[in-house]
Amino acid sequence: MSEVLLLVGLLVAAFVGYNIGGATTGPAFGPAVGANVITKLMAAALMSVFFFLGAATIGPNVVTTLGEDLVHTTDIFTLQANVAVLFFIGGALFIGNYAGVPASTSMTAVGAIAALGLATGELAWDVLGQIVVWWIVAPIVGFWVAGVVGRYYYPQINEWVAIEGTSEGRQMISVDRSGLAPRLQFGEGATRREITGAFVVVGIGCLMAFSSGTSNIANAIAPIYGADIDVLEVLGLGSDVGEIAGVEPDMMFLIVIGSIAVTIGCFTIARRTLDTLGNDITNLPLTAAIVVAVIASGIVIGLSWIGIPASFVVIATMSIIGLGWGRATRTTTISDVRKGEETRVSVGALTADEEGEPSPEIGEEEPEDIPKASDLFNPSTTARVILMQNVVPLISTVGAFITFRFIPIFGL
Image 1: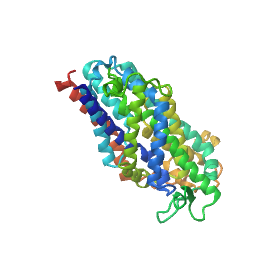
Image 2: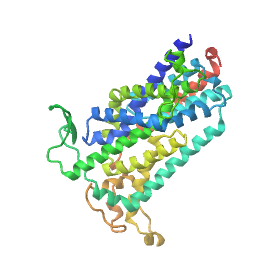
Image 3: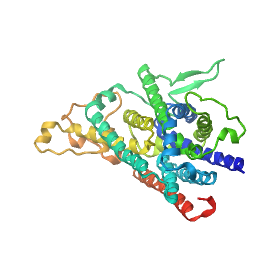
């Protein structure tokens, strides 16, 4: 019976991983795909590789937090409970992916596991409190770091970056398979500077994929890892396997299973979120996308290092707002502020510059030169994304709590 339940749990965990692949590929490679720098196929392949690297290196820290520390005892992670927890995580994420919205996988997973702990009276409130505090602090840090970059360094970065996607569906970077060995080829007439810029955008996507692996692998496998069961032994794969790259064998096995499921999601359902993040929600300039990606990815990797599951989407959103605020304040000098002059702040300020062009010095622009936020975001799509990013974790949390509190078949 335990073998059957474990297999069911692994299948549901794979379903969660599948939806993680769909939810995280868009934020990572949406800008590169939207600018026709690479194809969706290349984005899926790169996402798969770098997600696994992040999952296998820093990811175990977050797995331990969700699988062991968030509840007082792991006895509540019965195989029946694991199936239910993973079902609510995967089901909620699937709703977001079907709607083309990359919801926060970390918030969705923490909500479901915390609901299990709350329903059984085993929730570690101190650990949950630490996670929630970082969920509040991290976006604020992202906002202020991006704000400083936007005011003082964005023009120099923008002047250096010059990336233009090709037209008519042709990509800046593609793979030529006509010879004996595949080789990279670039858009016709692309300059060395544009090619370098394209590689930067793709490299940033890879960094984001790595950061996603560090934080999100736990959302798929933590409940099973937290259960008091030797996965390899139950499956008849041996129990005397030593550590792999410093990670215990059960955890590494689960990381591989989860990463394979993520890969499947990257190559299938991720096409929806790539369209939303690459084309529909915003006309975010690639320079801004690079800055936001570096800031948000750095924060997520740092939090994963200390075992905190983080929401890349929320941090990136606040970073965009901070970057736009910082860019908009360039119309006003410090001396102007002391004189009581006000700054017209708008996220749309990020569309005031063209890549590769030098920007005016601080105080040289007029507030009227700064575009409105509506010039940057598609209002209807943005509203849909914000709504679903709150609804998806709520579905997971409330559904799991009601199930574990009032349905006794899970033996809790």
